[in-house]
Image 1 (cartoon, rainbow over the protein chains, first blue to last red):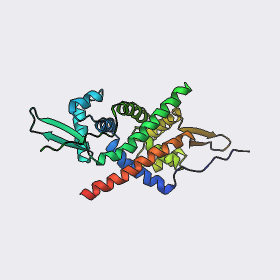
Image 2 (image 1 turned 60 degrees about the vertical axis):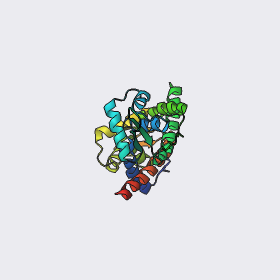
Image 3 (image 1 turned 90 degrees about the vertical axis):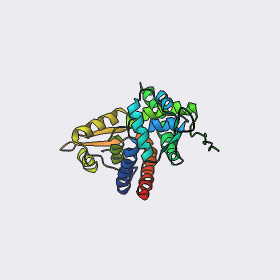
Image 4 (image 1 turned 45 degrees about the vertical axis):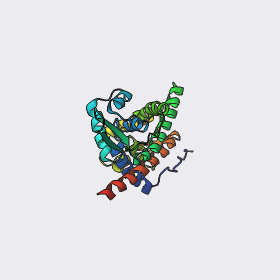
Length: 123
Length: 123
């Protein structure tokens, strides 16, 4: 007798199209190669350009600068210029709103850790 | 008087480097343009190649085929060939393990929905 496949699905058809379009919106903002990594560094207290570039090994100044501009447009980071100090101090401060990314980062990091273990154990 | 910046960080330095490397591992597997979308469609019960391609508007057959192969290597999908039927029926079944992606998809979709609302409300 043929084995009957378990047809129970994780998402319904309606959830499928909702998930597809909402995930697309999220990945449009966060799906860049560096975007979430820049946010992790910012949320960990790295606020100066050079410090960010040092923490994110391998990112070029041009790319980092573009990422920071995009994050500012999306309300996730605020560029703070302190002109009272000499030389002028520029800091990139994660906004209150950017804390909403904590869940995404933790969920992804958690999965990445478990997946690496799974793949390593197989070998 | 100068405003004192809230130096409270969302992640500590140790969490920062752990998050960076674990998120990197996760994005290495899931960060492709189509990867999570293919998984959403699979987890919603789309198991045939043509059905998947119809659901994921815009994906080419070559890219979909590559995505499915990568997902199989990562233990997230199983290619099931039913040779008893004519023509032979090929199905792509999400594995039990792939259910671990549900959290990631829900968290991302949730954020995407809220972020779209926030950006739309601003305009």
